Length: 93
Image 1 (cartoon, one colour):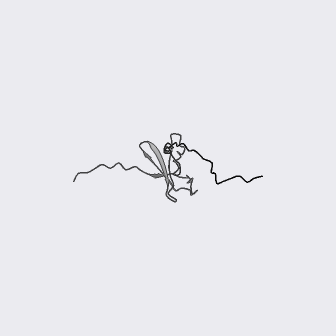
Image 2: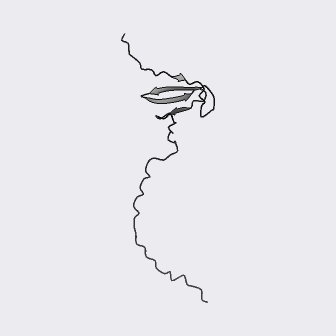
Image 3: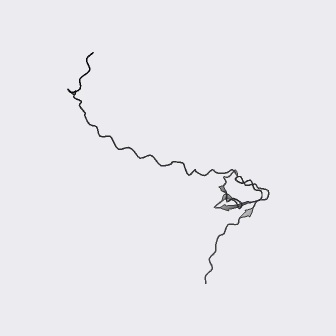
């Protein structure tokens, strides 16, 4: 059998850290993937990515619309002519 080296990232608990979602202390794990720090709460499942300064990178909202609205089809232009109806007479004053 051949042995395959598996690169498993080591997750570590951060002492004294409080989860920003559920406010539970000492439940946050941190790890690095490709030099980018990530954190996860084992109590509520909250996950987050941090930037170089250690600040949270906001995730894009699921309700956000990023695609362009489809263009409306050009309206067909038609000439319309109205004729007076002789059966409709204005009442005499």
